[in-house]
Image (cartoon, rainbow over all chains, first blue to last red; front, side):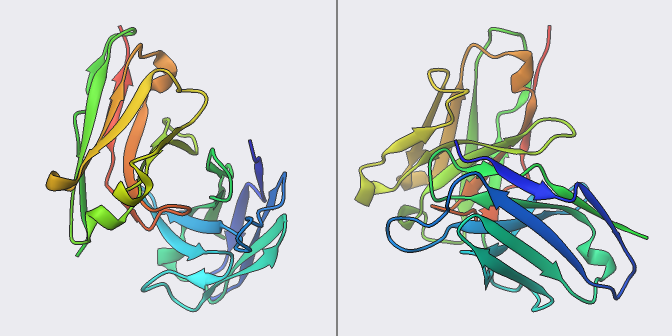
Length: 112
Length: 118
């Protein structure tokens, strides 16, 4: 199975600040079709996860441009700029290149 | 508006079984692959199973940790997907989410809680 490793485990940020979350995969996430199926999700307290970013850098419908994804191969980053209160929660990266689909353990974003 | 509603959870004794249901609306169900993802209390996300659509012969895929104990199925006429889980263990205690997508999960239901305890 592809192991997804997220760092840090938790992150404190001031409102209006910027943060980065790293996600590394144990194998390349480049699919035979040339696409890289790395996605990012946010789970707000008491809610279901929601898709933020898919295929490394594509924002899902309705997602603010304050969220940006980058990376390639096995190394990926989610950046959140001008952090707002509604951004707080746990962020997960996930891969859909290989079965079984797997997720990172999560990064908890809290207010400083 | 996409709506996803899971039902069928509850308290089950170890060794028991249950069937989760997921009713959907607001998108062309027939076009999409469907999944179940679970989350144990205070833990992260674990993909459980996927069922492809008719164009892909309703092929199914399962997490190894559950293979042999779970069966995912769908009824396109009802825009619904199901998860049958048997030989339940304490470690199957989790919120089970129904999700839409092939290689990432566009939409998630609110989840249904399954508690396995004697």
